[in-house]
Length: 347
Image (cartoon, rainbow, N blue to C red):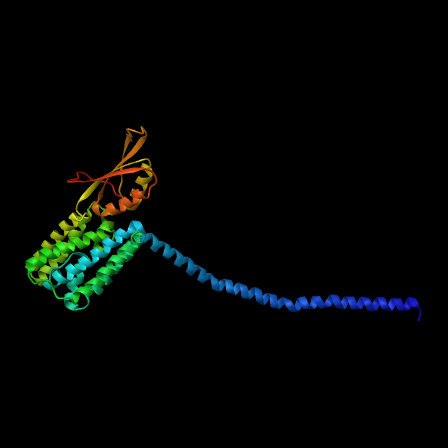
């Protein structure tokens, strides 16, 4: 064989070896493809698994943020008021009213009436009957006062169960009516002062008052008259009258504690951001305001003077609205003895 033939054979052998070397990594790539696909699928599955965990963590962080907002320095005093008020109200209910068949108003009164036949824990009935009104408050008002309302109702229900095992304070009907009404008024007044609520009728009455010309006090009174009429039929006319007397004592004490339902307040706000405050008041309270133009004596700057009329149960929320607006504000709140004419509410 000639040298040229040998060299040709060598070239052909080298070519085949090179082709084999090229095919090997291609085969290796083909082998590795399913493994990579498996890894990609695993990571996709892991991402899908982690999605709900991330959502849960986000929800937890949101909930923690809401709780922090509710329990910050500004609201600490409010929760102290609610705690003291719920304990005091539960004490008055179990120690003075229940033993003497004197009914409270609202959902609590209905719970007391039904408990007379069922002989179960009064606190459980109060919470169960208030539950629909808690949901209504959450739907209508959102998360603004949700924690306070739920906290007040749960604590009040639990404390009634605690005080039910204690000996009754008195069986004298006059003492039970007077002192039970006074102590209950102090407790309910403190709860309302803190922005809470221990009876669902108050929530509904506030919502109805925003849609009608009826005041909150009138709505609550009409509801309670029905309850006291039932009490008079079942327990006797004298018990119905004592229950009504206790209600009026409680209402007056609530008024003294500074959260009475029946009294209205006039509010005058002097601010640089009157339009913003007016919008928030109308949105959250359903109250319109009257603008008066003014001028500062020292600064000589023009000021917005807002005048509006609110119920005392709305004072706490109005203060939060004013504090939440940036800029300088000066507010005065005064009693009103009488209102002639109608004031517009949001529909």
